[in-house]
Length: 163
Image 1 (tube, one colour):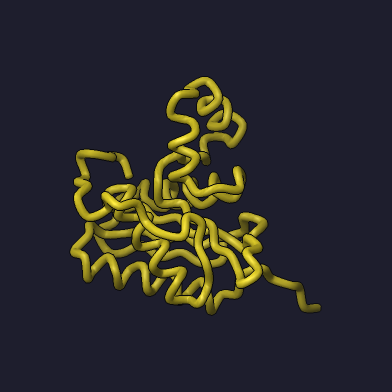
Image 2 (cartoon, one colour):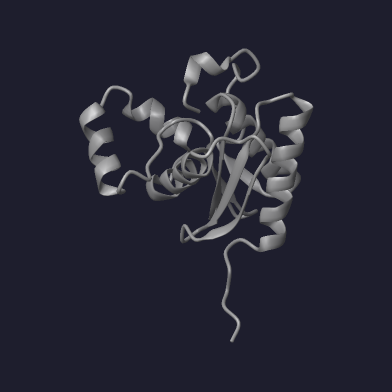
């Protein structure tokens, strides 16, 4: 039996490897990258040596939250910053898997259909998101958001910890 997949392992591998490569080029702290398909099933994940033990759960939560809400985790953060009660309700409803900070990016195909999400954790949230967006492009796919925030280069770990 062959099941239809929304996001092939080969594409997930390209996204992960490119995100990690970008992290090294930009001299970021060790990253953990998680790629989920449209049904929030794990397709692939990698953690660099030295990546903290919570990084997988944070990266998964960023990707899972983006899929669950249908928007990037940056947009979730921006929309929910003034709604702490709703944000708490989402955290409860998701059994704590919901991480509303940048670094969770939707993956879309050429028809703009969401086929999965990538979540990255390790450096600042804006830098994590930058790696996700650029890696999706290298895989020949499209991201939401389409471009990283303008301040990803200037953010420091203390600005957004935990990322």
